[in-house]
Image (cartoon, rainbow, N blue to C red; front, side, top):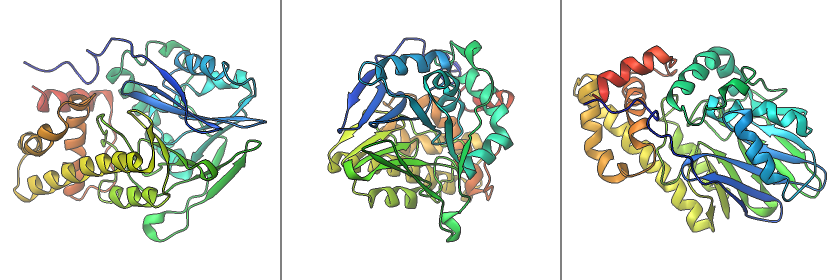
Length: 329
């Protein structure tokens, strides 16, 4: 019997938590749903990851308004995925004038944003209940340099003073996508990683650069953060726990990619590669939130990258269903 497609069976609302980590930094988490981060300065507020819809963003805005009435001037897109960015328009009424993204993220929105929006709305019906409030794709107004760290180029870096707190924004390297961007509050040692880091949740790699991802995680480790707001999972406190999240993500990525390389070397087809990957992934990660959702997309990408397909193929709603019927029957 085929499993329910992606997260279509996940219809139960999650409990959200709005938690202060440091004098200026907050985490908005929801039991394995996509997280957002909030940095509250004396003059302005920045939100890292906008949520899936304007309707959903309004809940985060309500939480922010319990602690600050400052304008939410900046919204950071850590990457291009619809579930992270399509809520951005809700912040315009709260003072937002800048939507920040990397050059890589802008290019991915241009290249595949429309297909990704349709694909993710099918995958996550609960998160996109308010899809009628989405005005369309989210486009950045402020784009951070085009330097590619994998080619030895220095990536663009942006520092924003919110009043009493400075936020550094840059792309540490390829991983979850080729446009991943972080927010780093150095004085308070708080890292907002987006989906470069997850903890005790599925690590979606359908659009990933798997070979480079571990090195990017080590670049983040070198920051010696004391707090991290991962893309999914609880906010981690203390450097040892930050490293636990980095290690968790690295283990997922390396285990997955190794299985993909083994499958390609053995000339397995994709379905056999899925069965082979389960042998190493299921015992370690099979219990975590959205594991069964992520795994077939992840195996497909690992198989492609191990086969030499460097630029991830575009997911469409049609390709999603075709792959799912093949691998999750």
